[in-house]
Length: 109
Image 1 (tube, one colour):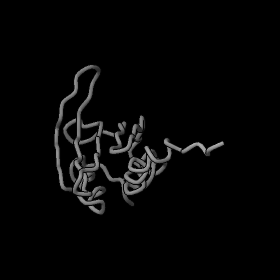
Image 2 (cartoon, rainbow, N blue to C red; image 1 turned 180 degrees about the vertical axis):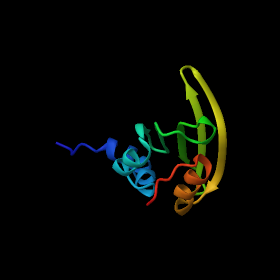
Image 3 (cartoon, rainbow, N blue to C red; image 1 turned 90 degrees about the horizontal axis):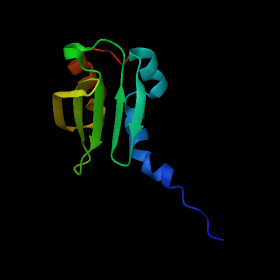
Image 4 (cartoon, rainbow, N blue to C red; image 1 turned 45 degrees about the horizontal axis):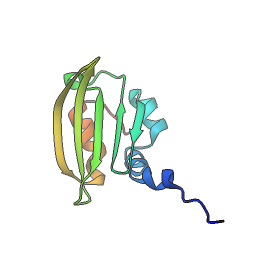
């Protein structure tokens, strides 16, 4: 009988990598109240409860074909969703700094 492939592991690899580049789920939960983590083969999205600049409360980080990231910050209230800020061409080592500079929230000690 052939061994079953672990599609879930492959599918979430990018989302897990992005999460680790930001410090991990536990770290983000402790620092800013991060919650509702959603990921797939090309992106990670999460919300937070801390008060951020401009009312932002959600980020979507997507892997681009250039091996950089597109980072989009949203203000979501009920059914209303508004894009506040979008950046593309962000390298992995700049994700945390961009998050902090854009939201005003610290995710690094």
